[in-house]
Image (tube, rainbow, N blue to C red; front, side):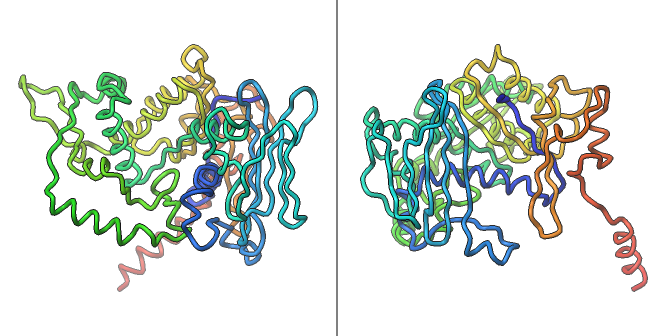
Length: 410
């Protein structure tokens, strides 16, 4: 059974973000390994840093998904040499069928007779990534690959990510991919008090354009594999966009007009808005897109700068089949125990709740609430905060007291 919502709870540095990073890496590899990542000299990957053998061993990624009412299983293994194995399977009737399989060690590369093979791929790229370059309608592999990358979005908590998302919103407004009415309504939903939205545009001096062209030229060919997937820029990229339209966006600014005691209040630049307003914009836009079109959204620290009632509203939208008619899915990490409490109107099933703990060796252990004995009337939030399920920090308040005392003694 699949669920529209999955929540990951855990202490700081317990591996919640690392888990979401693994999902982000997989989708980024599908999108970029045949293009942007080829510019680097090595293989971009992120092995476990706290294990001495991880650098030489492979990392395993696999997802099970439904596309066009058809169940698929796709995965790959990557090591420092490149793609060690890759496979795609489906279930046309009652049994799994292998659509393609590659194995570097066994030197095998097989396609099912119903699947048109792609052109030869290098050891540093995925077959599905190469399939993205094929014309639409020409390949089953291309259709599957496009569905995966186009139906996926990621929301991060960093300031640089939020700036990136706001820049995307501005572009969508200018290119008419999003209406001002949609954005206005999203802000009204959050009761932020904004009554007007505009995009302020001004010409960029030619000298600035010239400097940007020089910067693009200097940085354009020097990206390393680790540069091509910027952790603050979902989906990767060098962070420098050479498109002329994006250069022009340097002079575009989102302006918000708030309700006040005077008839014509001066507009605020987006940089002057609160962290909560910007966080809501960065979250609500991809959520709206997913609810309208379907797909998967992963959100790191979904409660950051967001009121619990807004968080409840987002979860409720995904849980409500009347709103979530396209079967969109949300995976989020959080510290917010309110989601597990009786006060939250969205009731997550035990199978939808996961906890992360850091083991002695630094690895993340993932445990499902369904693995624990069920107590029908139990207050899950209270039991979670009490450490019954793990996912909570082991604090040392005496050390803080010792630090304070040592300062006073001096």
